[in-house]
Image 1 (cartoon, rainbow, N blue to C red):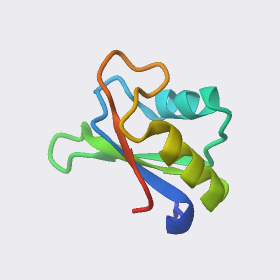
Image 2: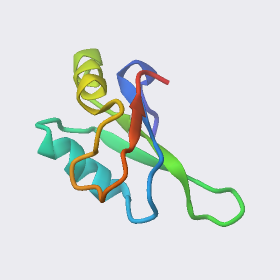
Image 3: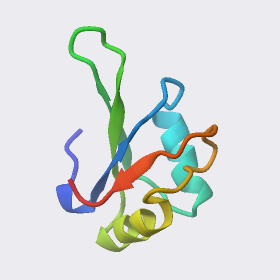
Image 4: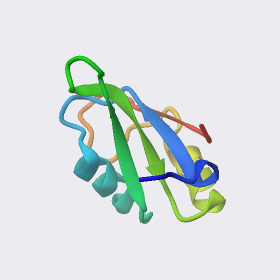
Length: 88
């Protein structure tokens, strides 16, 4: 899947249980509809590397999500703060 870099954001500090479905549901809980989620995997272990990229419909959606989530609790996470930053 090719991501549009302008419409994507980086999400870090993922816990092992935070898979693509978790990330999609977290964004849906905020009223957003992610077009895709790419969990980055560790080259050797194949497990999650602890971060992902989320593609949204447009730059405005990315900006909204960054404002809502940057340094805040991701909906449905327990209990650590997960970091979200702007465009990659």
